Image (cartoon, rainbow, N blue to C red; front, side, top):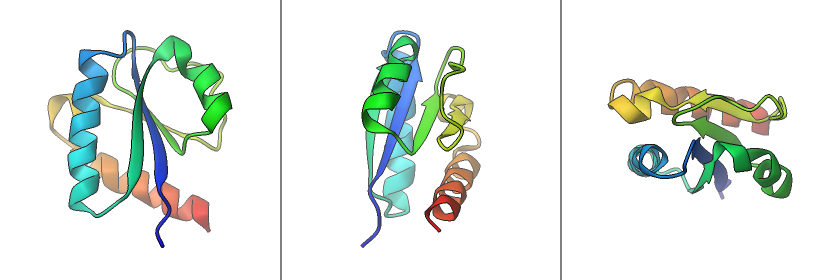
Length: 103
């Protein structure tokens, strides 16, 4: 059974930018039959949320990446998810990282 990934999508207010990025990411992962739980958070919430649940990936839809994210968690700029251009490459690179991390 494939692992269910935990992905955080974050922006300044956890509203429009992160919601759009989340919707496009869900569509891209569903097209590849990838199971993931995708949560939206404010960037200011990330350190505590990362400590609590240890996501596999953090996508920054808008704003600055916190310096406190552990190195074993992939951090991705969400610009392709916002613009609609480059989504396939972003998702392919993310999945390559996750599969290599697993083993």
